[in-house]
Each structure stands twice: as structure tokens, then as C-alpha cells.
Image (cartoon, rainbow, N blue to C red; front, side, top):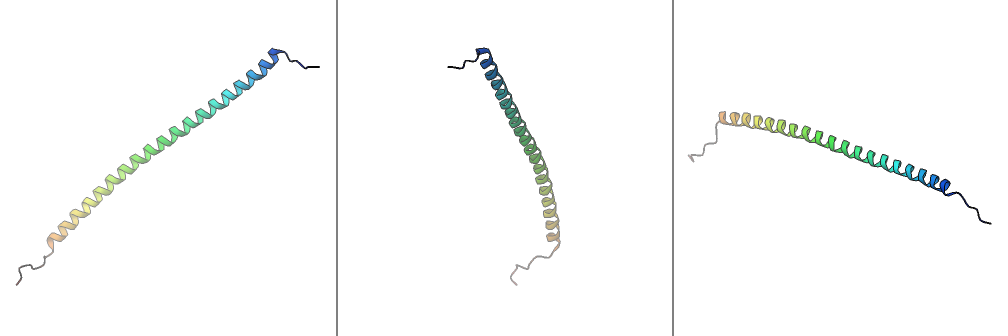
Length: 83
């Protein structure tokens, strides 16, 4: 004896599984896109912060070099006349 189910019942079950699978995949893809966007956003923010810190440190080093050069200009140099 064979058990037979109506095609509408089978189609309804399969269709609901397909819809559920499609929704789960859509949610996962959306979450991955959001995560990638967040990583890109924070990386770009960090890059801008790093660039400003490099510029500030470069300016500080330039000021320190100028100060050192002024200080060295005031110091008497070694006597290289040989005599």
C-alpha cells in the first residue's frame, strides 16, 4: 500500500522551506554587508586620525630641529684652524 500526499500540500511545504531559506540567506548577506561597511568606516576614520597625528608629530619634530639648530648656532664651534 502506498501513501500519497496531494501535490498542493507538498508544494506548500517545499515553498515555505524555500522562503525561509531565502530569508535566512538574505539576512546573512545583509549582515555581512553591514559588517564590511562598518570595518571600512572605522578603517577610514582611523586613517584620518593617523594622518593628523603624523602631521602633528612632523610639525613637532620640525620645531625641535629649528630649536636645536638655533641652540647649536649660539654654541662656540671647535677650533679647526690647527693652531
